Length: 203
Image 1 (cartoon, helix red, strand yellow):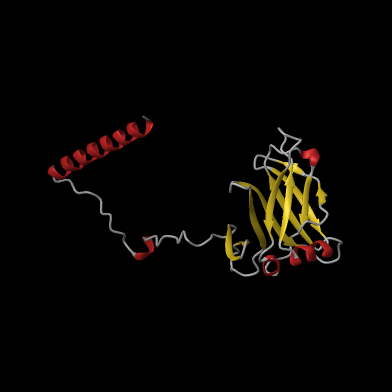
Image 2: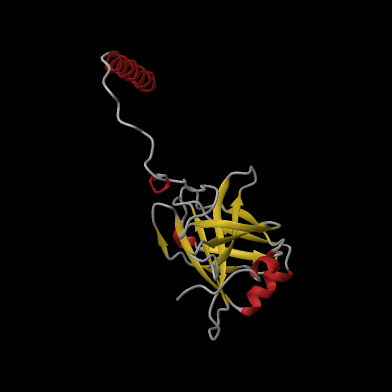
């Protein structure tokens, strides 16, 4: 009903404006010129296909990973991370993983952020296992309207495991069924190449 009413109102306004225009033309009144006085008055438009400054965009894809970067003014030294959307067995998106380098000197050489649904049992924490090896457990740090976040530090050993592995399994527990587990496959195809194209996260 709202759509039809809006369309009717638009047609009515157009009809009224056309009638007014016809009356003005009939009386011989001059209409203001719509021709710009110079080229400086013209707006050449903006290419919406190109990312704007500060906007995140996908620079390229390395097998199962996206290289996401933030556009800078000069297009150089753009901060980049690697990203993968995790889906359940029927193809529905459930979680997101982004990974980036960390400054040298700390025990963690890389960092990752995993975003899971709000309906996750936080006390059960997040678990990640590579190629069936013993899993590691990570706490959730915060939740907002987007979801719940686990901020993960990866050691050199962890990173090497990802580089050599075929897949990892990310396990979460739903709040409404805490006797069950949701296991999400995280492909490691293209991991090494993607990691080489990430940048050090700003501190």
